[in-house]
Structure formats: C-alpha cells, structure tokens
Length: 284
Image (cartoon, rainbow, N blue to C red; front, side, top):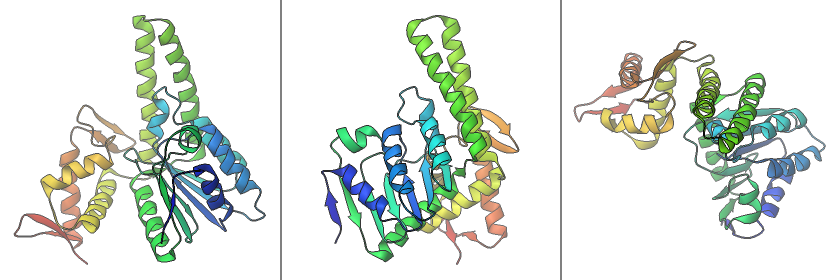
C-alpha cells in the first residue's frame, strides 16, 4: 500500500534521500536553491559514491521568476558526486526515486514553496516492481529530452544571470532599448538550450524515438493524433512561429514534414506500419 504524505513533506523527501544506496532520480520542472542544498547535504553525508539524475525544464530558468535556479544546479553538480542534468521542455511531473526501492509521486516541485510553504500532496511507493516501472518511465522521458553537459549548463547559468539583471533594468525603465535587450537575451538563452538538444542528434532521430515512445504507450494512432502529442513533448522543436537549423537539427515550421520523414524511416526499418484503419501500429 502506498503511504500518503500531505504533511511534513520535506521530512519525507529527506528520508527518501537518506535511503539512497547508489542512485537518486529527481524530476521537477521548478527547482530552487534551498531544497537542492538540503538534498546535497544529505547525499554528501553518505559514505558511498552516489549518482544523481535531475530531469527538469531549463526554459523555466529564463522566465525571470527565479522558480528554476540554474546557478544552484551548477553548484549542486560541482559539490555532489556524479550528476546528470537533463532538459525536457514538456516536463510537468514531480517524482523522486531512490534506486529501485522507493519513489515519491507528488504535487510538489523541488522548491522552497513546494517543501515548506504550499499545501502539497503525494504518495510514497515501496513496491519494487512498481518503482522499477516508474524509474524506467522517467528514464525514457529523459531520453526524449537531452542531457546537458556541465559546460553548457554553466554557459546557460551565465546567460540567465544577465537576463535577471535585464529584468531588473526593465522594471526600472520602460524604455524601448531595455525591452529590446531583454528580448534578445531571451532568444539567445533559448539557442543555448537548443544547441544542447541538437548535440549528437538529428531531427529525424529525435522524432523517430518520440513516435515509438507514443505508440508503445498509447497504442495505434492516426498521424493527426500523433502531431499534437509530438508537439506537446517537443514544443521547442515543433514551434510553428520559427524556422531555423541549429547544428543540423531543424527547429520550427516544417516539423510536420520531418514527422512524416520519421514515420517513413521507421516503416522502412520494419518498426511501424500504416494499417487499413489509417493508424500507425507498432511492430514487435
């Protein structure tokens, strides 16, 4: 039976972190400094080498609210032992997993508000088969996004620091120049993350993996049903307002064309087929 946690949420999370033997997985679209420092403190108190995988939406760092502290992520990766930071723009889930033996599924982000101030709710699961399934699902989610190398994360943190200064300037001044500078900075910070998305990948490869992912979880789908699902997972790649190529990966208006290419590529490989019902079926 799952344990229900609606109070002392911070205490329950730290108990889960203390129980980690080798690997902690955190999925949270918003992350701030104080709770990340608490996690680091508990992990550093362990006598064994632990790996941490953090899945988040790094675009949230550029919204000026401070609800995703990229500097804190950089510092965490520096002071806690092996850390992977992955970026997935469509992430909304909040899940915390200790090895394969315990997982918390919660409404709470890894933020000060989520741990100390807000009314949050969550369940702690200890059934090993269930936890393994949850971990596999979120590792698959991470593969839909991209792992962000530390050097790119540091560069992005520098971009965000400048953006925050630009936000303060804009609040003090309604000038056209200040707004233009902020707009340019936002665009540049997104390019930093798009380059991370493009690293070692192709548009075709990203979309092929996504089509397989969707058909495996949802069953046969029409192309017109696949389109909104793919766009929801990759809003940065499937952006109808732009048309650009970054490091060989296409971002923008022609994304449906690339979905069609990916479908045909998977069909040629014998991984999917278009059946008489008009739906794409996954071939086992």
